[in-house]
Amino acid sequence: MSSVDVLCGTDREMMLDFSSLCLKRLNSHLPLRLFLSPFRPFLDANVHKEIEKDRLIIEHAAEGFGKEGPRPDRHVERLFEMTKEVDAEFLKKWSGPFLSIEIRYDDVAAVRKQRIRAFSDMVHDLLSHWDEELSFSGIVKKTYTQNDYKETLGQLLHLYTVETKLLGGSLVAPGPAGALKAIFSGRVFSIMEEAACEVADMHARRAYMDGGGATGVAGTKK
Image 1 (spheres, helix red, strand yellow):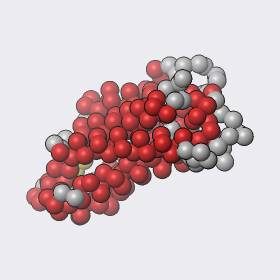
Image 2 (tube, helix red, strand yellow):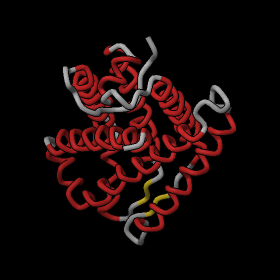
Image 3 (cartoon, helix red, strand yellow):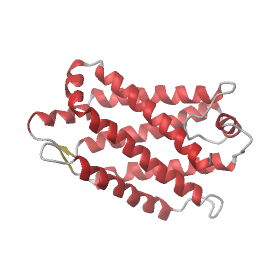
Image 4 (cartoon, one colour):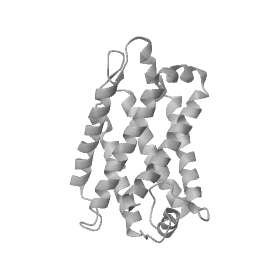
């Protein structure tokens, strides 16, 4: 597998673990469980949309690795526009008479760009220590401390949860379907933040296990 495929695969694994844990915790709250049930396909599709955006970031960062040094802001702007195209395809599929979604990009631009920039920098850090003879776990150990890896994974997930909370205000669903907004407010954000910490810790520990396989993508250099 190429480095891009490995990085995309590890990111996908982390995001699916995060989504699964969030839904499990949300389902433990009866009022939220009643709201979640009809919208489960939408929520599942949403996390795959985010995985697709992450692939764009990874591919773009890998393409420019070693060519220009630190990623200039113009690359962040370009990737931001590319993620909007992914959003547009998603909205075209899911918007309808009972669920209207209009993303106010002025509300989310700063957070999304911060995550794009951080993700790109971290991909560069990993690639700078890439060794085809090592497992992904070995590359992580060569590049980051376990605590730094955990903290930065948590930061990536935190930025994702903040954007998700902001995007909740973009949902317009008439009648009973309007209850979907409830999953993005109050207690729900706390649940997502708690899940982010747990998943980051889980993937960092997995990476540092002897013989550990591929996990997430991120970290601060030693």
